[in-house]
Image (cartoon, rainbow over all chains, first blue to last red; front, side):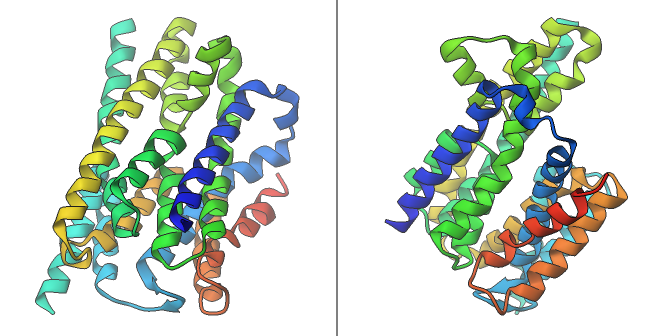
Length: 101
Length: 217
């Protein structure tokens, strides 16, 4: 049930936010501070998600096979390789580390 | 010129859509069913929000932590809508459809057509939005079915694909010193908070970094 709650409520909220943008008066969003904070919100959350997915198990900070995958992803992004290569490179590297151990 | 816009839009649609494989796999690995994973892509249709919701659940977080992170990531779509609505000039159900396909990519391609005129801006928006929608959903299904038949996520590297996907999403945004500072500070704050707060809250708490760093011009 928890998963259905997440699927449905996330969908409703995200769709409502999109509709708000198209139907609400423009001046609601005109404040420069709101624009600046809003531009940084995805950067903050996505960065936090990078480390929480790569270095966290339950509520503990750990270093395991995922680190190798993330390092390869970072190198691929640095080399300006396309997204699918970034994700696949990380997966293959991490899987290799798991199998070697 | 119209042909060039359509080509741009379709190439974005296919490459970004293919990324849906990673989401489909991530959803199933986090414990969602294939149907639930596909509904994310059909209804939420915003990659970062979707990855965040399944990421928080997969990490053992509660439903409201997952929903909160996804909602915060969805706020930027509202601001895209504010930019796009006066350019698209749509009414009724077409306005609703336009809102649903208002994402990073459709807004980005549309605004990049500025020098080609208003017609190209609209065409860029619709062709990108609708083609990403089509391919994102097809590839989500493929990824979800694939992950279900693969077995252990770690042995296929799927648990490392998720942070790599997040890194790929944030990377193109790190264009200014302030943005890079926000990324670094958020990573540190999240890791510091993780052992002392319930699962998932360490991620949402980093919205404070955005507020602090964005407060002054």
